[in-house]
Length: 292
Image 1 (cartoon, rainbow, N blue to C red):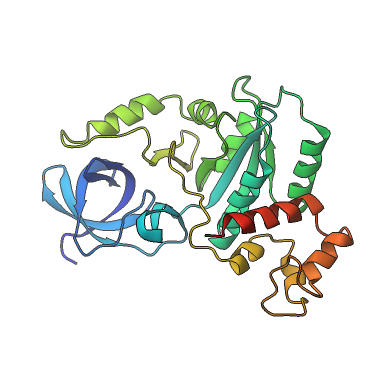
Image 2: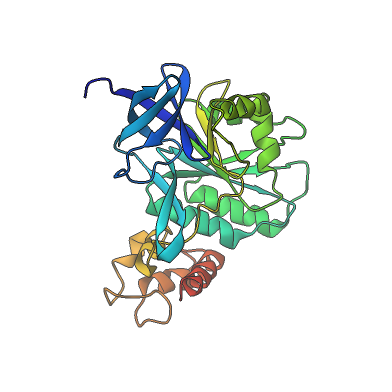
């Protein structure tokens, strides 16, 4: 369309949206009929005033992460993510139920996932090491770093290059210090973003896309709960456990719930040691969380 330009959504600024286009950032509004715009979206926009514009179209997304919203709906928060990195540490103790929930959601949305073990100077329990070995065997890459000591950051920067990534994880594992180590001028970039327009207002709980100095983009989402199980049913949760997939089709019943069902191939694989018993027990707990 005439006058349309392509842009990248960096953040929500109050009632406006920061869109980067040709190296400049513009404060944009959206056409009323448009769906919710997410950080990371590629959009087509048009000028409406100097340094301001209107988003006319959301371009097709390669992936989407959403969070629970009102009236049992889900709201897109971040789009076009290549990899979700789950950050964990020896302290606080790993919440493997939460980690499994993150991984199941990533599998459901067809987004690659990896693990980052931060604070590697702290000791790990034998149980934690065993769980990490199992995740690696499932194909989830594991990076060991220390944002405080600067260990492993070079390898992490290399992994984040040429893609869009997002960090998640339980409170206290050091996501913010890790992000600050990767983005030393983050505060400056945030302030610059806030000054995009006098009407723009950036909040610390808003998802924001930053360009990493060594290449790649990182979406920082403090305070945004994007990993609820909203939108997933029991069948999709089971599919989110990649080690279950070879066995799901072997269950006696098509609607097998993989709990106490007769001739459940998944449960049989657990009993035979082909599936981690601890992961399976956490799957049952997540199923319980899904109940109304």
